[in-house]
Length: 309
Image (cartoon, rainbow, N blue to C red):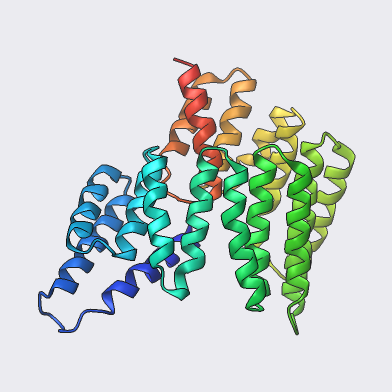
């Protein structure tokens, strides 16, 4: 979510740099104000109000990249996916080179919201290819791992393994990596292999890879990743139907992550703790993130709450 907000600031900045008179109300500054207000409303969970402002911005400037990008994001969060993708397609067409990758990724996330990994992959792979051609191997690794996660959570562990491995190999192509970055790449690869093994029902391999994750974290070279370990254990226990153990670990994980909240909710549901399950599903649905973890979470939470009515 922190990364996504930083990208949104960059996207909006590309519009506001076009303002020519400091303190003056110019057409460009009025447009930037509309986009900024809409963005704030979207992040506050007020998508309908945000969309109304984005429509005003588009009435003023029909080929505004920032407005098409922003309204697509907001529309996805109220399940208006077809309309969202029309705007993302225009945003991709209009995107300045520096933010084209992000526009492509957003289209991939949009398809992830509806569980369409085939279409999602088309857009994530474009980003991977663009970054690889530009020798941005760290960026290529990031999006390969993202696509691996999409495949894994949408039921395709074989392709998940392929893309996580591609991410690991892309990362290794960087020159002069410090030891902490080498450890981080090894950590991510073991973390992915543990989750893939769990999805395949291989408890022994899942726990073996989790032990590798723990050893890498114990080196202390990536302390900011420590919170990923209880998430991993909780994930493995959940997938293996060890729900009490899953709850114990997931409660120690990031409680702002909608996907973790949904794993907790599903665990509570399997344990008969219906009120706790519903509370966590509801909390997950309040997320305003436009990222793959929220795309996974939102589909599950909506389905589970609808079926409980």
